[in-house]
Length: 200
Ligand SMILES: [Zn+2]
Image (cartoon, rainbow, N blue to C red; front, side):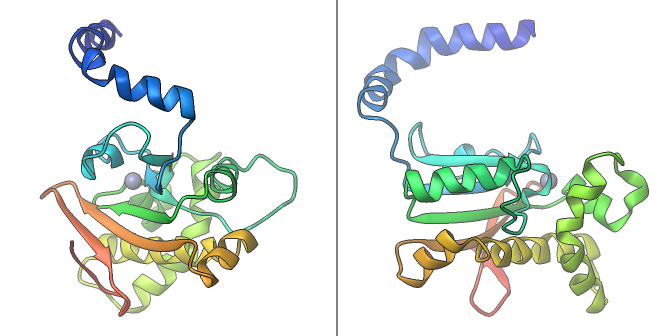
């Protein structure tokens, strides 16, 4: 914790004065981020750093393996769905990115459930069962990467089960994107219409 407090003091002394005007403006007029990102909680995948943007630009939700659950308005505690509802219907973001990444521990656990904590992670990763089935059906050389990519596609499919997302995509108020960041090389790949990922 000492390290973090030290970091905060550095920020306060050197970064805050440079960003003060921006924060004051964002505080006065509220946030209006143009893009929402669904990223993994993994400490190596920070969307703000990857896209090199500042405060006020990205509305971010991070969870295990950057998964989007299907639309289930059942009154239960749906953190990711709540963030989606806020980002899409209130903030009215124009772009929504599902950002996967290489060497994802969640996806590793999906491929080998014995590696996963059983109480919440295993049931959560069931969202990506379809991704695992599809990835393994092709007998891939690299099952981990294939599964990471398929999981991004499953999340994009699930986004369209939310009626207020489907309707905004249909009338072009909202664009959906898939992406994958390779933490080994720093390369970002974007999902193309043909289903492959290619360097951005
Ligand atoms: Zn991950």
